[in-house]
Structure formats: C-alpha cells, structure tokens
Image 1 (cartoon, helix red, strand yellow):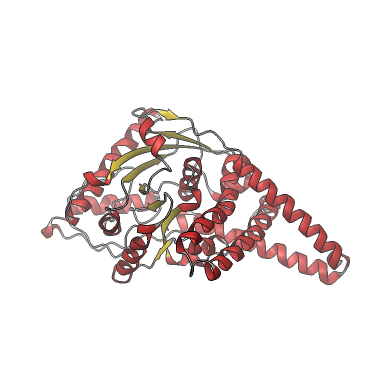
Image 2 (spheres, rainbow, N blue to C red):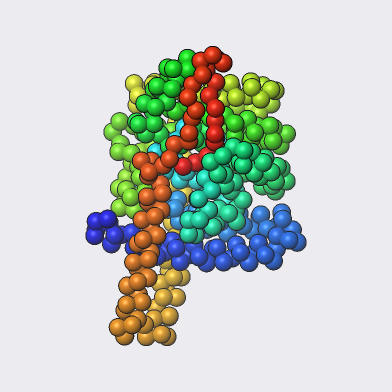
Length: 387
C-alpha cells in the first residue's frame, strides 16, 4: 500500500478499531448479563450500541469520501422504509454494496437492526465481524446441507424481533466481476436460460427458505438494483479511505410478501424472473445513465454520523493523551517500539478489511454443469451469501 494511503488509513483505522473494541466489550457485557434475562431488551440496547459503530462507516461514505447515493423509488415505498420488517435482495455490483445498504438503513432509521446473511469467515473479522455476531447476522458455510438448518433457525429467531429490521440477501451468491459474468453467460446459454448481461444467475435456495420462514411476519421485499453511472469510478474501500468520491444510483421496488406464489418452485422462479427484469432495468440504465422509471428521492446527508465520529475522535484523543502522560510511553525506546508495532497492526487489519471487500478476491459459489435433459435446472451448492 502506498505511503500516502497508509498515512490516511492508520489514524482512521485506529479510531475505528479502538472504538470498535469498546463497542464489542459493551456488546459482550450485554450479551452475558442482559440477554439471558430479556432477549428483547438486549436487542433494543444492542441496536443502539451497534449503530455507534456502523455510523463511523456511514461517516466514511457521507463526510470523508463524499460518496453520493441517489435513491430512485416511489413515495409510498420511501415513506415505509424503516417502519416495517423487510427482506432485501440486491444485485452485488460493487465492493461496498453492504455499506450502501447501511447508508440506506441509516437514512430509514433502522441501521442498528440491519442484518445480513454472510459467509462464515466474516465473523472472524476483528471488530466488524464480532459486532455482526452480537447483532445476530446469519453466517453460512459453503454447503447447503450444513447451511439449510442454520439459515432456517436463524430466520425463525427473527420472528419476535422488537423493532423494524432489514435482512439482506445477495442472491447472486458472489460479487459481480466480468469473469463471473462470462461464466454465468456460458452456463445460461448451455442450460437454455435467459443470458444475463448485467447480473449473475440468482441462486434461489436461500431466498426460498427466507420467504418460507418469514412470510408470516415480514410484510415486504425490497428489490434493490445498484448501478454506477458512466461518469463515476466504481467505489472501493481503498477509495473511501483515500477520500475519493463516487456516485451510486439505487433503484428500489417494494413487493408485498403476500403476493408471492405459495409453492417453493414458484417462489424460486419468481426470484429468477425478478433478476431478468433487473437485468433489463440495468440495460436501460446503461442507455440513459439514470433510473427514469422512478422518482429521485432526497435522502440528504444527516449530521448524526458526523457528530458520532467527532465524539469518538475527541474521546479517544483525550484518553490517549491521558494514557501517554500517565505511562510516559513515548519517552523510551521500548514505548516508541510498542507504539510502532501497534500502528503496524492497525495497518495490517485495515488491509485485511480492504482485501476482504475486493470483488476480485471473492470466491464464486460453485455451480454444477448444466443438465439440459431436466430443463436446465442447476445444482446449487450454496446460496444467498455475501462474499
């Protein structure tokens, strides 16, 4: 990593990881002392505590990098966002789609109760993965035989969630790259399926399971389509830390859960059809560089994340100065070496986070070869996980 980038990443990383460890400690204490007595109370407290961490990443987008997220949807959907439970499905276009989701959740007032289905290794990420675990994110492996029961039990636990939540599924199974698109196109052509141009082929097992388990208590599905205008570079975690802006266009269509078909096979086909429509919508966006079928909504740039980040910075700087004065840490070679090792560790951890977010380093879910004789249905070994 370039020296200039490291000079920016280190102080931001120190702020994020130190404040995150404080958040993790508070979450752990609440998990041990409060959750056994009242799961509802624990969830309400954790929602507020987790938001203090996630707001730092929202600040990174809103105030540091100045990423503009333009939301296209109808007024009714816009007003309902954050006021109801929702299952969220989205194409996986950029390295920071998960952060875009958090920004939308923050604008809607449900950032602390935004949940996602993640790959199992995500929970090992220092600070961010640990906080996700305390916040009841669902972590899956790469085997549907193992993941089916895990997903069902995790979804069932959400039935008594005390406040509106969003559950995000990336049903393409992996992040979009040109190499993965070519593989999906080859498979679709051999299996007699619609050949995608802007999305990957959805893997529907996790989606079908989610609809089956949540139909009775989740009223809506938010079908989100993310696109990057021609004039904007694709956003990445590294660009965010460097303070480099981008523009993201987000199209949101609300579907009523009660309107979905009843059988699993029909629900799976509904999901595939949605992605065919999404592909055509992205074709139109490529031509027009906007989502012209929906109204552009004003999401603003709330000051809350700026206040939280500034408060964290002031608190940690004050604490660090007090600690340095008390310990005389920087007045000895041992102290200087200790500080240097600490900064190197933070830099290493931030590199892990950046590398984890990169599309090129994500691993596509495996697809068995097409079998035209049974109608082109493909075997899904894993589904609906964020990579």
